[in-house]
Length: 127
Image: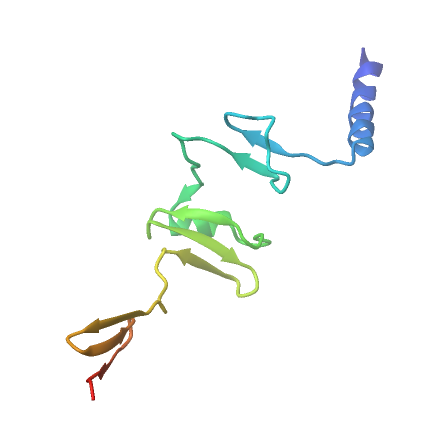
């Protein structure tokens, strides 16, 4: 029995090497239909994905060094998704608001360009 238990890991390793170590995982309704570009595909019409939830203090205690670029958590203090950017060694919040978004509108013959920082308007008249 002991000899068989030693051969099992070697057998598994050999099979993985022969198969090229390619793997795709799909969880959902049609597990045999997976997008060729997906490493992981989740499919549901009535469920979502739940990311790790933690406070800022818990996040800082859990991730001190060698944090992988692109790591995503849900911060319960800010109530926002946060992504680690390794190049700047910072957590960035994903708030769904583009701070540079601009709106162009025409009101009472005035062309108005607005964003969060400034309001620019020009009066338009017929000649």
